[in-house]
Image (cartoon, rainbow, N blue to C red; front, side, top):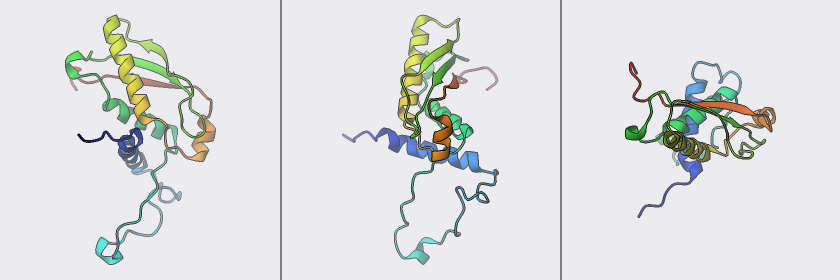
Length: 163
C-alpha cells in the first residue's frame, strides 16, 4: 500500500501553482520576489542535482484566495452528488504563521439546498481548508492577517449551464 502524502506535500504543489499564476505579469521579479535572482543554468552546466528551494510563500490576500480555491477544486463533492451553483461562505481567521485560528464559521449556504447537501458541502469545505492549512505565508502577510476575520466564498461551478 502506498502511504498517503502529508497535507503540506499535497498543498505544496498547489501553492507553487498559485504563486506562478498570481506572479505572472505582475512584475514580481523587479520587486525581489519570486523569479528574481540569477538566470537559471542548464542541469548539465551545474554538474550536480539542483539545490532544494524553499517552498514559495503567499504574499498577498489574492494569493491566499487562489490557494484556497485550488484546494477547494480538489475537495469538491463528487459530481453525482453536486448541486450546480452551490454557494458556501465561511469566515476564517489565521495567526501570523498561517495556521487557522479556531474553526471555520459558516455564514451562508444556498438556502434552496437540502440539509443533506448542505452537510455534504460543509464537510467538503472543511476538508479543503484542512488540506491547505497552515498556509505558507510571508511574515508581512502574516502580520496583516493575524487574528483578522477573512470571508471566503466557495462556489461549485461544475455542472452549471454554459460552463
